[in-house]
Image 1 (tube, one colour):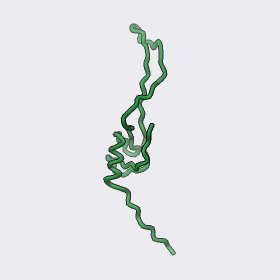
Image 2: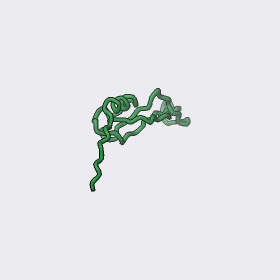
Image 3: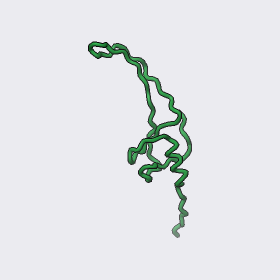
Image 4: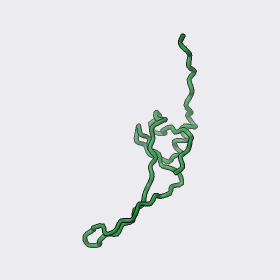
Length: 87
């Protein structure tokens, strides 16, 4: 899995820049009995390769492709605020 080093910003709630999940999909082959539905065989799960990761915002639960989160962060970059020392 490739994770980018670019910032994310949720395009839905527009408040989250730090809490996300990367969602991965798996495929698992099984053989079932046609009459009873009992699982007869189970293969090892295999990861499904996606062109880009699916990201979920852990604040509002919005789920979308990674590029939407990256583009939102580029469109509304985080501004560094100057820090004034207190003497």
